[in-house]
Image 1 (cartoon, rainbow, N blue to C red):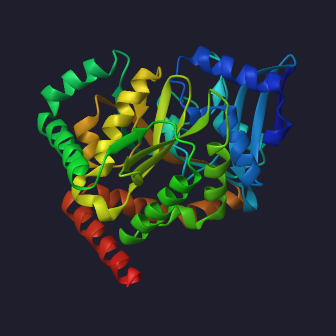
Image 2: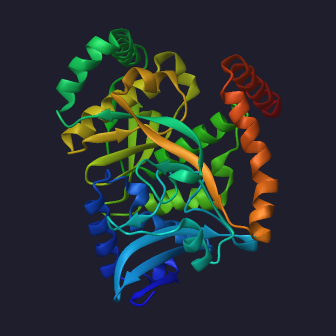
Amino acid sequence: MPGKRILVLRPEELSSDDHKMWREIRAECGAPANPFLDPEFTAAVGRVRPGARVAVLQEDGSPVGFFPHERGPLGQGRAVGLGVSDSQGAVLRPGIRLDARRLLAACALSSWEFDNLEAGQGLFLPYAVEESASPVVDLDGGFERYARRLRVTSPSSLRQTLAKERKLARQVGEVRFEYDARDPDALRALMRWKSAQYRRTGRRDRFAQEWITRLVELLADGDEPECRGVLSVLYAADRPVAAHFGLRSRTVLSWWFPAYDRAYGRYSPGLVLLLRMLEAAAADGIGTVDLGSGAARYKESFKTRDLRVYEGAVVRARPGGAAYRLAREPARAARRFVRGRPRLAGAAARTLEELGRLRAR
């Protein structure tokens, strides 16, 4: 249409004005300032993933929307950083009308896959095939207010976590916590612990993929206020016993890669770290901590509410779209079947853990 066009650029080709406009449009949408949908995250992915692109929607020469994505063989597309990105979608000025398949055509994509599409993404929600909860912790009222709520909703969790912290101090040594640690050794330890956890539980080791390791290292060195890495570390006797690496904006902190040293597992150092991190985040102006999708008992104990996230794909009637359906849809249907049957899901999880133990021998 006259006055409207779509440019497809590499992330590094975006200007500082583009970044500014991206953030302004994002703020107009009223969506939480999740760092995964900030241009800085897409720029970092672009440095480690050569297929990263951004579609810039323009009206009369001015940007009115941005669609970050990755392009693979046969034009098969995916959310930028798929597999580690906890919030996905397009950033569009309110009122923009767009057809998803036409957008894909403009980007030379035969399909576009997402697994953490945020709520409110009307352009892509019709293509979602699965909905799940992403627990969050609200800290707008400060940590003391949150702790009072926790004493009502999960009194045993809070009491036991504080008791484990005291026991750790008595039996191991002085406990201290750093919210924003610049400790490369602790970051490497975290990645080792997390890799071991993935293998032990029979899941794909994300840190065995070089691009993910490089992405974490890039973000750990960043200083952009709307999207930068935060390494939080719990020490006992000056030794790291638990750590978390996440992404933060000015108001949202995403719980991303938590892990702990199993030698100290009886002290629940991961829960101690989470509690101290929530306290420090509230003091640092964070209003929301997004714990991410995926079932976990501790998330249910510490959350204040759930966000909704979605999984699915937009597929065009092209050879690459057919290839996507053949490769991905059977596995996705099988996962939905298992997830809908708790007893079967439990058996599958136990099987994965046993396979992980066998591989570790």
